[in-house]
Length: 242
Image (cartoon, rainbow, N blue to C red):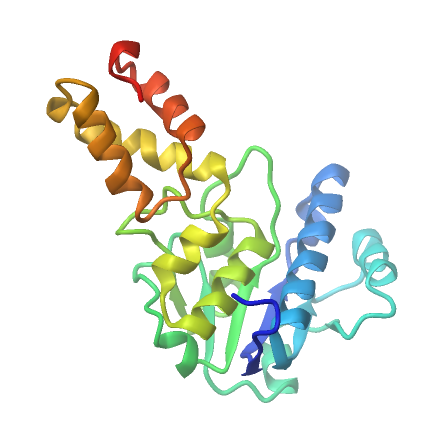
């Protein structure tokens, strides 16, 4: 995305903070950081936008969150998520959930007027918390997962990176390219490890490793160092490394 590129209007973006009480203090600070980075991405990328945080009740963390975002254009709605959708007149909401049954396609970002992300930072990650949020708040809403060539591996879960994937895809229409351009090296290494494991029987020497590196580099954010780390994890002989 060029620095001067702007999307005329972005979908409403809602951070569902219904589980804000779930976080330890360090996780809460990480969540605040990811929310503010996500807001920065939307503010920088969209000419028109609404960035919303929804949580149903006040508590210590919610009050602290409100102080942190003071002075921004972030709209805080202290209501249920369903009430929040009603307040902003959302007609076609979509919840992004890594464990949804269907993959997100680029054109769907132009169809839905509101995108919802689960406001969760958990270390180590606990699976399906976002799915629980959906079941608790909006069991009727459409949900999609962002995958890379059919797998979650290689797709970062940070709110700000997911937000950047969204705006880049809105601008270019190319979801795979957007994932690659925003992909942290650690995610590229994890996915490269998986792909190399699938192709171990193809590796007879350095030329095979070079070919696999070229092919994976077309859709993963790989450099030589990251690729070598993946080779080491798989156990490929150093004589074959490039």
